[in-house]
Length: 462
Image (cartoon, rainbow, N blue to C red):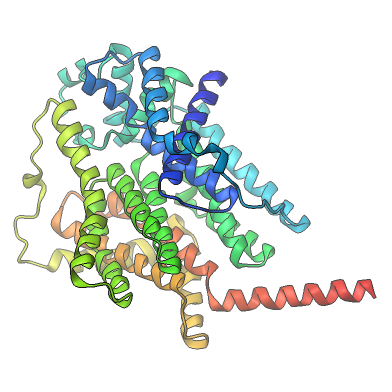
């Protein structure tokens, strides 16, 4: 492993992401700022090899380094321009009883990162698509390589987003032969950020237990080192909803646009996400209506919200696929030709429940996490009956995924149940995590524990 190359790429991710956060004037606690900067920077940096290909520059180590420097300078300019004004919030060290949980998290994260580093990519979707394109691009210094002389009619995986292809090219050239270390950066940053979210809302012991419950969801943990699009898409999709909650809290237009930008990155990773983003529009429309914004401005804001993901969709299909994949691709042929028949939608919705979630197979894939969420939601409905903005947004996001995936299966028959839909349900899990962090029952339990702690401390002082 090239340590210098890894440090170079890591710093580029951080500066690029930090510059984008600064551009949108996003203010978060120190750990959240670092984590979201890395997540955003990883996705943005995947464009570097594509830009080289568009410019007709051979893809090699020197040209990739140059492209990264230029892209980092461009995206990180808002940070560098106002570096003296850049301030972190005060950092709070973990309590002593958090360290056992942190040690367990560290072991699990290390195992995931080691598997990313030590083992080559193995999923069929990768070795017949992005990984194949990246390997040939590194060998032949172009994304329009001789790989397309191979008969690829048995797969359509090379038509997918350049997100993984670009990152694999960068990491193969600069870091290690198998690439995919970028997946560990995404995963570790995401887990640390989620823990800070839980820690803000819940007592540290409850936050630690919840985080351990989330990390050990079987399929979710497995895909932290099995390189596919769905895991990265899940992270960016969740980020989009998280910043909707921030927008609803302070009505800041910067959070509104940044949420759209994050949904755009999620769309860039998996193009069909655009359909799910369209289903978010009613939530945004209701929010704007309740702010008593006039109709003309409301329409402009909604168009702005959907236009950014649509632009990323255009970049992927009309620039990357059209220019870098010398094989004809017709989206129209992929659509359902019998849209008047709604039975596939209801069949898929039924199968999601009976075969994927509430089944023995579902237990092996998602563990008890979904059951725990359902039980807690039922308890809140019976006991608390009131929901804050974060719980409403997270529940809305869950409904978008729950009904949106069957709708995708209805309009795109290639979206099958046991692969695309099963992995697509990953997007439910962090949204459920966000709801659990804001659950009235758990927040009440946290208050009881904190009160008991305060009483014990005062008793000891006496």
